[in-house]
Amino acid sequence: MNPIKLSGEIRSDYSGFNLLINFSAQLMQEEFEHIEVDMSGVKWMDANMCAPLGGILYKLSRQLNTVTVTGLKPGIETVLSKNGFLSNYGREKKQDTHGTTIEYKRFELKDGRYFGSYVETHLKDKGIPQMSSALLKKFRESIFEIFSNAVIHSETKLGIFSCGQFFPTKHRLDFSIVDLGLGIQANLKQKANLELSAVDAINWAMEGRNTTKNGPIPGGLGLKLLRDFIEINKGRIQIVSDRGYWEFSQGIVSTKELSAPFTGTAVNIEINTADAHSYCLVSELRPENVF
Amino acid sequence: MDEELFIKVFEIVGAKLCVASDDGERVHSQIAAALKEGKKVKISFANVDSLTSAFLNSAIGQLYGEFPEDKIKSGLSVCDIEKDDLGLLKRVVDTAKEYFKDPERVKIARKEVLGEPDAK
Image (cartoon, rainbow over all chains, first blue to last red; front, side, top):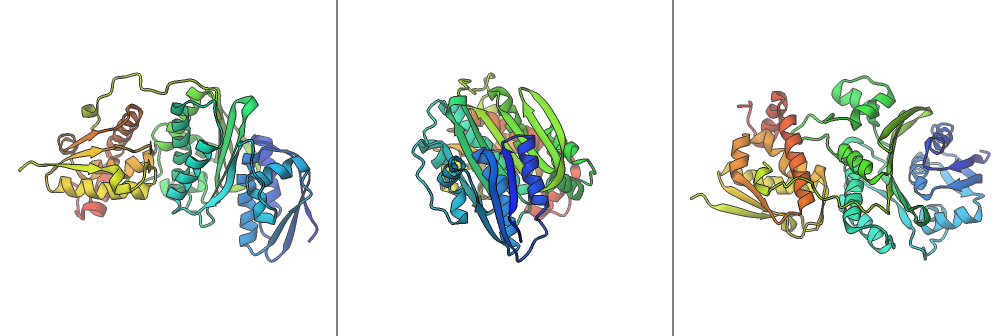
C-alpha cells in the first residue's frame, strides 16, 4: 500500500477535525495492511489533536494493520515526542522541559481512577502557574465530567484517548478526550428513540436536563456543568460526533456538518488560564437545604 | 433507637478523587442500606478533592428513585463539604428529583435496586 498523506494544519477547529475525519474515512475499511502515514505535509499540529489522531490510528492497528508515522517536521516531531504520542510509533519519549504538554494516553473504560491520577499529575506538576486553585479545580472536574460521560454513554471497546497542550503566551490550555464508541446521534436513536441529525443530536445533549439515561441512576448534568463553566471562563468547547461539529465560544453556539462521519465522540475544551473568577457560589446555600 | 450513622466518603472510596460512577455506587450501597433500616445518615466529604456529577448521581441521586423525598430529607445530612461541592450536590439532587418525576423510572429504580416489583 502506498503511503497515505496527511497534509495541512491540524488545529483544534472545524478544519482540523474535518481533515482528520477525511483521512480516517479513506482508511477505515483497511485490514492486514502496512499503513504508512506520511505527515510531511503537516505544517502545524495542535498537540491535543493527538487524541483524535491517536484514536483513528489505534483503530487501524486493532484492525491488524501495521501503522507507521513518517515525514514529521522537526518542530512537530519534538512536541509529539514530548507528549508520548510518537512512543506508540517507535520514537523515544523526549523530556518536556517547559512543562507545557499533557501526555497522550489511552484509557480503558474501567480506568477512572487511573485517569484521575493522570489528570492530577499533569495539571499539578506541569507548571501551569497562572491558574488559580479554584480554576484548576473547576478545570479538573470538567475533564472528569467528560471522561465520565464517555464511560457512561460510549460503549466503546477501543478505549478513551486524551491529550492536552498548554499555550502559555496565549493563556490557553486545550484538552481533548475522544472515544470511538456509539456517538451521540446513535445513542439518542438507540436509547431514547429520537431520530435527529448529528448536529441536532449534539444540541440536544448540551441543552437543559436532557439525558438518554433511563435506569436507576439519573444523569443529564455533566455536559451542562461543563458548558456553564466554559461560559464563565470565556473558554471554548468543541464536540465532534458522527457528521456533527458543535462549538461553544463566547456564549455562542455554532454548528457545521463534517464532510464524513466520525465514529464516536471527540470533545475538546479550551480554557482561559488567566481567568481570575472565584467560582464561589453567589447564594448562601446551607447543607441542611440540599435534600 | 434513632442512631445517626457517619459515612466517610474518603474511607469508602479510598481516594480524594471521587469521580467514577462505580465509586459512587459503593457509597450509595452504604447509604441505601442504612436508610432502609431507618437510620439517620451523616455523609462526610472530608479530604475529598474532586467530585463529579456522575459520582454524586450514583452515590446520592439514585436514592430519589428508591426512597420518598421526605425520608431522604429527614434521614440524610452532609458535612465537611466545600461550598462549590455543596452547590454541585444541590444541582445533582434537583436533577434527580426532576428525573424521578417519571414514575416509570421510579419503578425501574425500585425494581433494580430494592427488588420491589412495583413503585409505591
